[in-house]
Image (cartoon, rainbow, N blue to C red; front, side, top):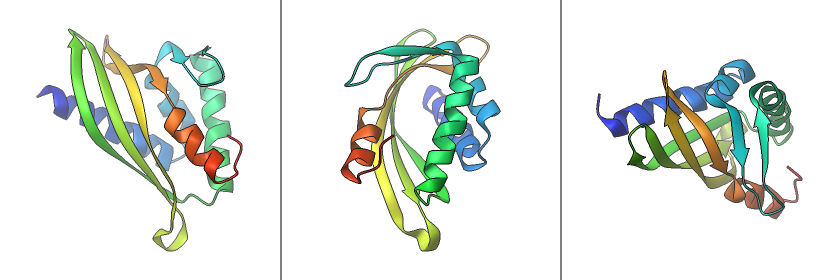
Length: 136
């Protein structure tokens, strides 16, 4: 399978887990410890804590009226063997296909037994929600 197809398949699974509110599957697509650089400071979460964070995030999305997330792989670059950078465009839709929010997201992935997210930069998402007056 070609590299870009592998990364696209990974993110299809990732977005599908969000769409199904499946925090267990989503958190399993992350390394044991995920890194989160942010404008307010960097932090890391182990997988169980990240799973709980996913539950909170999915609840936040529901409260914002999101019924359907969409993700599009904009770019995928193999930085080193088994290390990739990916940029995704997300669009969050409500009832009647109303666009609620959209942003780009950058990931660093590492392949061991499979591709997993090691690091994400979510500044675009945080800015999108802040512009709507929603505290993420």
